[in-house]
Amino acid sequence: MHKNIKINSVARSTQYSKVFAAHEVNTNTVTYKNNGMYHYEGGWPKDINMKEVEQTVRYRRKIEKDELYIHTMLQLLPAMEHCILQNNVCDIYEQYFNDIEATSLIQRTFSRTVNVYRDPLPMKRQITHISWSPDQGTRFAASYCNTDFKNIMNFSTTSYIWDIENPGSPFMTLKPFCPILTLEYSSKDNNVLVGGLMTGQVAFWDIRRGSEPNEVSLVNQSHRDPCDNVLWINSKTGTEFFSSSKDGQIKWWDTRKMKVPTETLVIDLEKTENQNVDHATGISALQFEPSMSSRFMCGLENGYFLLII
Image (cartoon, rainbow, N blue to C red):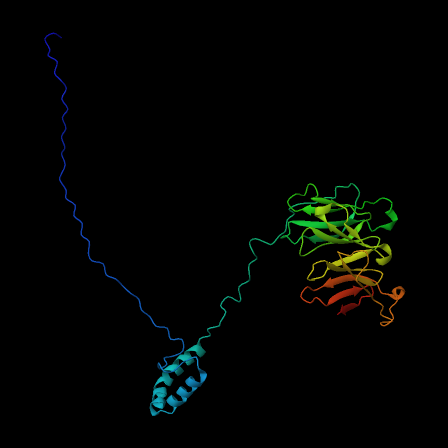
């Protein structure tokens, strides 16, 4: 080791490759432009307005009187006739696949149950009416009523407003003093409902003020039989509705004065002038067209339809 001499490290590098040169050439670009013409209705002179019928008719008559017009048409007619005859030979409307049997759709239409809204009470009750709220159908009101009068002792008067996204529990419970046969949302306010009761009375709810009805009509001014039809009227105030029952009466109401009806119509088919409630025909269906505010139809128990103006 003493005989060896320590040499300092030296870094060296070498490269063995060919030298290349890169050159770029860019030619001058050429600009292109598309021009076209659309003949909407032939070629008219500048002084003729093609939208004026009188000017175009006058110009046609002038051209048709020209001698060159006849010679020009004689030259064009053979070519046009040749094209027409070709169209007659080939049926351009022919259906080529009529004899092929239509295959069934790969995906058939179906429906599925999304949610189930169960009555919270253990007793079984009928749902007599369903009404959707006007706020894009996020809620609906369902009236529950047991129409079996034999079991009238075991009944509940509650009805419910459901939220379609929450089937587990009702959004709100309506608590009248007697069962509700029908419920209808107001088309102008999703917090307002009217209902027909088993006693023949009508009730008004504003759910912002609680579960109990805010206004109820008087018994002696209401229907004699259970009120099973109520409909809102397309009025300016948005507070008017009318009701019907099997007693043969149609009553108009205003939610601002619910004690007595504003008008009453008795469906007595025997005596149209001197109407008698005792001879009235029961009303089984009631319908109202919003576009015709002065007309409505009612279906009677004897199978008749009445259009009332």
